[in-house]
Image 1 (cartoon, rainbow, N blue to C red):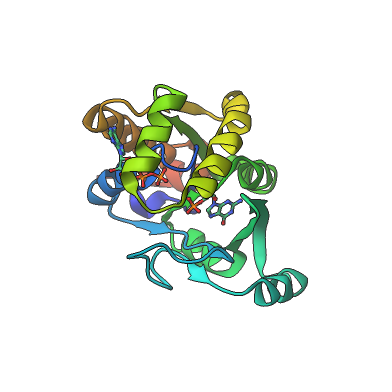
Image 2 (image 1 turned 120 degrees about the vertical axis):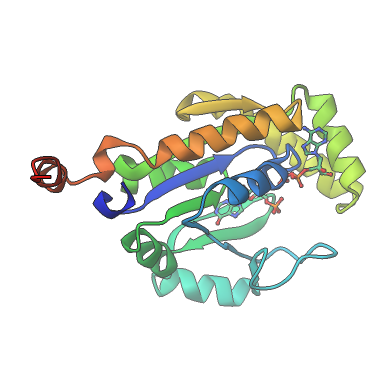
Length: 209
Ligand code: ADP
Ligand code: 5GP
């Protein structure tokens, strides 16, 4: 089937910071071969353990603004007071290589990606079962100070109102069940009819055996 794929697919994952997106994605990476995780560029400071070029490309506000003016981004947004953006070039080359391109981006970014690449995009909104549980996870992750956590909680209250803009919704309560669901959605994202060239399929199907 991979050889008949006309182009790659996009999987957008959004949800409040701390709901478990990175934890769930680890299972997707094990289950899907041909994927590219879109490494975003950000002006926020790295957390302990985060590496430049792995988790994000960490840049200054000046560098980010220069990149905006030079048309470097497919989309960019200000989240919790910092810039975040997705580079266009790496996305295009991964799509042309037929990969599943995975974005962990906020609701503003999702809106733009959907506008521009609707046919190849599948989106999932993830939350914790409750707001209180979100706070617990942010506290137990122990990577942000209390004012940052407060900002993330306030943003989460706004973001959750956008669930209906997404194709799928996952409540990340039991990690194993939620990751199985995300893996199924990631696989379905690669089976969208719009990703295939119908003429190639018919030619292949009519082949004499
Ligand atoms: P995000 O990438 O959305 O910011 P993380 O994957 O970093 O979130 O998860 C935030 C914290 O919650 C981490 O400490 C992680 O181990 C924990 N976590 C993730 N999923 C669950 C779950 N289903 N139940 C309990 N804790 C979880
Ligand atoms: P964090 O600081 O917790 O890594 O991410 C904060 C928020 O920014 C999350 O909601 C995450 O999905 C979002 N985000 C990360 N990268 C991008 C990006 O490139 N574009 C947009 N629009 N949002 C992003």
